[in-house]
Image 1 (cartoon, rainbow, N blue to C red):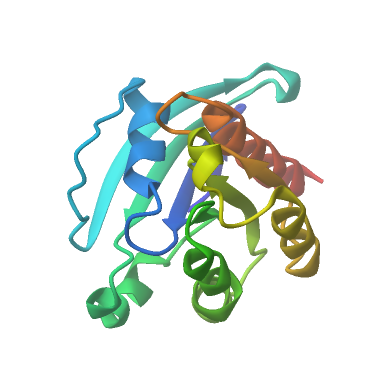
Image 2 (cartoon, rainbow, N blue to C red; image 1 turned 60 degrees about the vertical axis):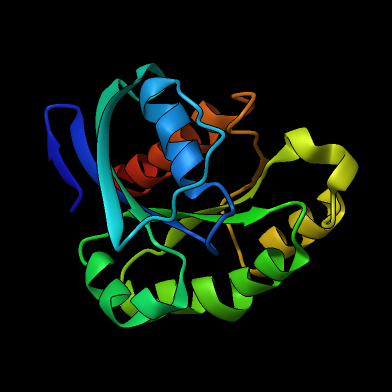
Length: 181
């Protein structure tokens, strides 16, 4: 689902990771600069859109963000959500090592199985505002990103709006650069 019309692109982006890692919070912060403390599990998928200007590429990207439920009971339905996907954010919670382990064990393999084209993704360590509870160090994140051939590794805080726009924008830029090369 990436199409080009005079510098305008439509990019379908999957937001993947275990339940509770902050996928919905990242999307809400990116789309409407909002953060909610209360946690409500996503059922199936939430779909939000945001137009992003990419001046260095002389383009605009309409990002269609698929915030996909992380609970295992949605595993069978999840494959349908990948259709037409241009890229993904693979998100883990820096305070929960199990969510980090599941990036390669579950989320990346699921993404690769269902997305047959380019497979562009960024590894995101979320909740870096909880540094005092850190369970995954930055070096492990960078090492995994290299191992899984992620475009980039970035730590974010949806709560404090740290590197949120950068994560989404860098993915959009990489997808468009690939499509135009």
